[in-house]
Image (cartoon, rainbow, N blue to C red; front, side):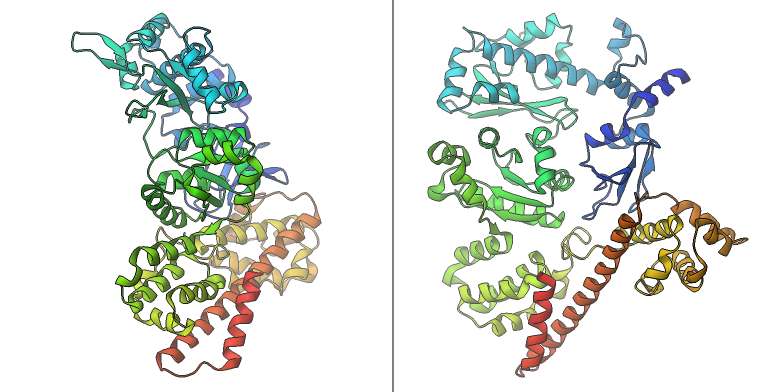
Length: 588
């Protein structure tokens, strides 16, 4: 279907690209732009830039770029026309008349969102209804759920009847077959449909963009199953979404940390107690898709799973998945095996806050669990090798010796015994899983960050060429991996004293088409407010080089220690001291 050009222009004029992308990606203001982690490839340092005044976005890591329509198409995996409709609906621009015939051909996803929203609103009204919702409100009261929390999470009640929701959907002209596809109804053997949820507290799950995508129905008594949950539908796949991420994302981004629990009511209880960065995994363990969603807003996750065997196993698996995605994982031990909801009701928010102040590092969780599981049944050398491999995989280089001391203490070995164990571990086991996700959080993969730093440096000196003289020697050309960027930087260093204004840079490369094209491509990639901001960025680049060099020296010393230990020789005191000093420097 051809859309009128005027409609396209109106949607692009009204759509705030920062607001639209901000519903999917946590963005922080930097100068005139907005910066965040790219949603299209894995990264730990933000290289995704949104330019609200110019109406486009660009990732300097994977080169994704475009306008607001391009972003919506790519993020939602929909076509151009559907992206227009989605934005048109959001900003009040009519893409086409919604007559009955057009409504029937409306996209299936949009229709399911509508059916879910009708159901969510109806369930909520039923909970607040004086007669119908009395038992469910009593249940909420007994669990300490307040009226404000009921409203904030749009909790509801599915009456214990067979056709209550059926009637509501019919009154709103919702196709019942489609409602069954959405998981709201079940087909009857006698023809027709009946309500899937009956006599349950209803908890909706919303996407970060606001659409209702799924429901969890909690039994009010001891009946089984305790929960009925939406299965896979065209708008929802279990293991892809996180419950409450839509309300937790801003707090999690601000704290750069998220509390992760297993179930709906634990999560709701945490929010009610003031822990606004809580989300729920709604499964036995984190999935890569959930870890990817979480990584967009926070680099740290505190796992708060049940203390039973299933909860411990879920935490262990989640640690691996989160670490592979580049999220620093921690765990919380709740005394007496209570779940977060029960602990809060008995001990209060301050007691829980005290627990949060001392989470257990992922490395310790894994080491403790494996030693406790294997006990004395396993030969110490095998456990030492396993511990060494675990430490290598989970802990950044500057923390590995600390964890070797911890593991050696638990195993009754010396630290040198544990260090020797690394020589027996297959080096292939050390390869980072999921790209560079398991590397030290301080080392950013070159393919991800360095093109961004190179372009930003060139962009800065295009704005203020006099800075070349100040930083030319501190940023050596060999740090540039892109040959053309390296050539331009080296040339600029040679003309540093004559560079005063942007036209001086262009004059240096007059007639050099390749350089001119490169400079044009980097111009304005990030716009800096003043000299202070530009210097601050260049200082960060120089500091990162220093840290990279320190980590390189640390790895060299590590390899020397390995060779000495392999030969069975004593480690010289000066080498051990230098190794410890570098570890302390990197930790600081």
